[in-house]
Image (tube, rainbow, N blue to C red; front, side, top):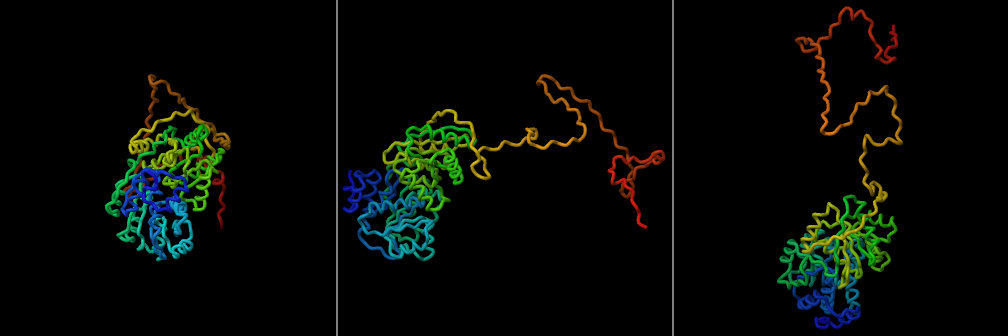
Length: 482
C-alpha cells in the first residue's frame, strides 16, 4: 500500500514524495486512517517504526482548515524530553513546508519571552514538555480550552520521568470532546490505567509485541570484573576491534558516569561527545548535531538519548551500564537497526549486573548470547577527576612499606622478638606457663568510706627517698619568699 491510499491531502502527499518515502510503515498504515476519522488511537510499537509520522501526517491534513487564535493552540503534542520535542518540530517543518502553519516549541532552556510572543501570535501546533507547559498556564499566558487534538508521545518514558501527575493535570484543562492519540513502546500497568482514564473507546494498534526488540539488531553481552577500570578497558577494546563500526551511542546510567567516561575516551584518543540532562540546551543540541553529521563518531549519553531520537544510521549501541529498568534496554538498542537497517548492541556486564540482565532477558523473551573477548589490558587509567581515582586505592596497612617515611626515634633497647612462626596444623603448640598475679595487700577502709594511707615502717622512713624517676626541674630547690 502507498501513502495515496491513506486519505492524506495532496499537499501532504507531495511533501512525503519529496522526502523519498513511498511505502508507509505498519504503524503508519494502520494509524493514519483512524486519526483522519477522528478516532482515539492507542499505538503500541517498538521504537524506530515511524510513530512520529503516524500522527504528524494526518495532523497536517486536518489543520489545513481552520485558523489559530491568540494563546489558544489548536493541537497539543506532549513529549518527555527537549530533544524529542525538537525532533517532532523538525518533522512538521519537513512535511508541512507547503502550508502556512504556526508551530511553537515550549521547552526548557529557552527564554519565556520568546515563547510567549509566539503564543500571542496564535499557534496551530504546540509541541511542549509537561513542565514548561504548566509554567505557561500558571502564568496565564496559555489557554488549553481550544485544543482539538492531544498527542501523548513516548508515554512510558513520561512514566519513568515522573510526568504522569502533570499529564493528568493537563488533560483536565483540555475539553472533554478532544481527540487523543496515545503512543508508547511498552505497556506497564500505570500506562494502562492512564489509557483507560483519558481515552474514549480507542482504536488499539499493536504492530509488535510490547517490549520486543528490532529484528535487525544483533545483541551480545560481554562479561568483565567488578572494578570500574575493567569496564573502561573492555569498552576501548570493543571500539578498536569492531571492524564494521561507523558510529556508536554509549549509554550510562548516571550523568556523572557520562562525564567521566567522556573524559576517559578523550584521554585515550577517541573523538567523542557527551549528552546528558544537566547540560544546557545549546550544548545538548550541538552535541546531537555533531553526531548526526558524522563530525564525532561516538556519543556518550544518559537515557535522555534513549527514546525516540531519529538518527537513521547508527551502527552500534554499547550499554556501558546495564539499565536498572528492563524497558530502558529496549529503547536503548532501538537507536540502532532503524528503518530496516542492521545494527549491533553490546552490553558490558559485571557480576553486579546479573540480576538486571535476567530481568531484561525475561522481558524480551530471549537469551542474549555471550561474546568471548580476549583478555583486556591490565593497566588501569590515571585519575580523571578531582576527588575520584580511576583505580580504587588499596587499603593502608600498618605493616606495609615504610619507604619515604621519617626514621623512628630510638626508644631504648627493644624486647627480643618472639617466634611467631606457626607449624603445621598437626603440630601442637606448647602452652606457656601460667603465673598467677600476686594478690594485692589487704587495705583497711575506715567506716566513713575513705581508704587509709599505707603504713610505713621505721626502717623505711629512715632511708633516703629515691627520686631518680622524677624529672630534673622538679628537683630544683624552691626559694620561699619572706
